[in-house]
Length: 185
Image (spheres, rainbow, N blue to C red):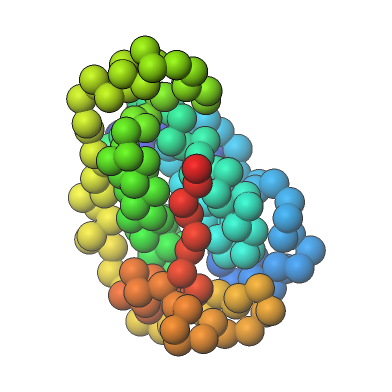
């Protein structure tokens, strides 16, 4: 089934709600996400899985993978219109973290599509000469409603995150989770 935005809906959408992932967190943590596909939406769903499972290395690796997909502008990520309210709320916050991580690198002179190894002054100069194009969140993310009941995603100790470590952006969606460490490089 097509979404009308050029991506398959059935393929990348995991059928495991966040609460089911949370119930099996210990056995699933550290494993590859079940969502398959090489699309921005599939990547976003993998990030969702890693976040709920508390697998931060997987999350950061997936964010880096997204960064290296030049044709995937964050602002162009299609609205997944997910029927699971909790999953949809998490998906709506993740683009904020992509923008945060990507723009940090772009503002430091490392645009998307930069080579893994920058050798020599000529390569550095070529990067500096590129137009600075900052990422933006997709418009649909701001339209996703906050959850009516709080969702708590435990910290590494499997406890509710302390107030000072909670993500403000997720709290705005009534999701209690530690601030997500998404910066790479």
